[in-house]
Image (cartoon, rainbow, N blue to C red; front, side):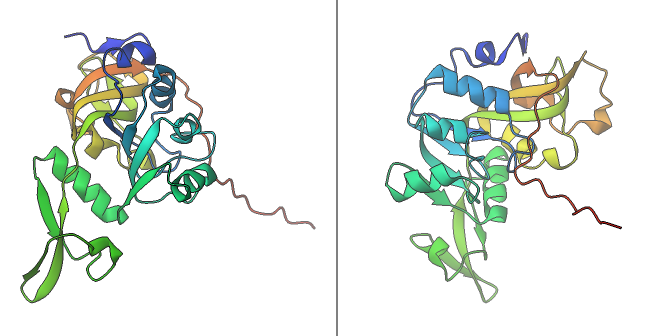
Amino acid sequence: MKKVFPDAKAALAGVVKDGMTIMAGGFGLCGIPDTLIEAIRDSGAKNLTFISNNAGVDGAGLGILLETKQIRKMISSYVGENKLFAEQYLSGQLELEFNPQGTLAERIRAGGAGIPAFFTKTGVGTLIAEGKEEREFDGERYIMERGLFADISIVHAWKGDTEGNLVYRKTARNFNPMMASASRMTIAQVEHLVPAGEIDPDQIHTPGIFVKRIVHVANPVKRIEQRTVRKRETA
């Protein structure tokens, strides 16, 4: 099956629909599938649920889908960089399911591994535990968290081959590998597309069996959320 599509619009054609649940890789603006996010915006799909560590920033990442009010619900860990997110949440336009960051990562990993639920100590005795099953193991209290599984995962990889094998670069790996395994269809944008067999098998982070569609996005713009530099010293 041919996995490589000419552009993001073609890769999403016939896939994105109203009311879907979509996982979007990235941490802040690092390793986000920005071209695929823009294509989802252009598709006009609405009432979407997004599973992502955060919601980008105003004007970038998932922030552009907040501008068009295409997101109905976010399942996230951190959303502090986006004023529009806060405005929509506080006004009741946007539903939010907050997760401790490690719990979010494990919920996604569990979903990809076919694990429907697990128990964790994180959040016991806090608002996070409200409404969740609680059990005691070896004298300690734990709460149950459900695994997460989406209709679509969109991820960003540094390198990929035509069979969908992916390699992520440094901190841009973040949530991308686990999300690539936790949906019915994974669509990847890759910076460097190479022929099958060119990537050393020991270097592959996501095996191609998880990836159904690929779009080549060479030289993507890599934004920095908060650029901090050292003050220049004067003599």
